[in-house]
Length: 232
Ligand SMILES: Nc1ncnc2c1ncn2[C@@H]1O[C@H](COP(=O)(O)OP(=O)(O)O)[C@@H](O)[C@H]1O
Ligand SMILES: [Mg+2]
Image 1 (cartoon, rainbow, N blue to C red):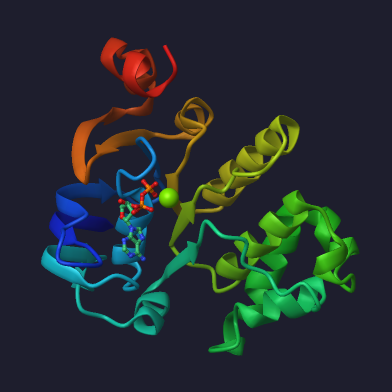
Image 2 (cartoon, helix red, strand yellow):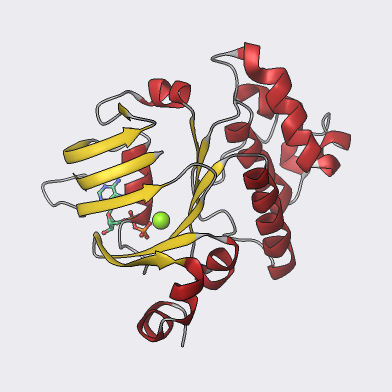
């Protein structure tokens, strides 16, 4: 479904992503782990057209999206939840979700129904201003904004950052539910163990290059990966 071939990108004259080839299959959960500054966020931004591709290719469902603008990429079925909190505090839950769909309201109703089927607590709070809600709830609303157009692939940059362990577990359960409804997920996570535990496959990125790749289960027991990236 998503295929990166020798992707190179960066901000200044230095390349941050230095020739990365990775894939996400339909309905798959793929996690990318790696130390801070290894380029995980940059890689996601490159896929979403927020950082320009310098060389290589990005294919999505057989279409070359390497040079597409972000709004076109959204139309092709990719959603993105950035690492930074990404909600409008003075708006209600429902209004925030509407902001995710303002470009094409036609798909909104189905997307909203799907979101509320998973996040039932937020349905009850749909009229509440988001600024009054917990960090965990705000995170889920940010995910909702990307979900609302029912993308076939959702990119999630550090979805669990800033959450308590309990909320983290709940969030990952929700992500699994989203996946079970048919959405492929590409997750970047600091909580590598937790993310790999719900993933089908994983990659380790270091200094803008792929260091390890494999089934999530085998990465979790790989001695080198454990020692270097999973805290022993
Ligand atoms: N907007 C930017 N301008 C210039 N350099 C950046 C920018 N954002 C990130 N970088 C640099 O790119 C490298 C990778 O950052 P990032 O992709 O955020 O890594 P990660 O998400 O793995 O922690 C870092 O060296 C960082 O300083
Ligand atoms: Mg990052």
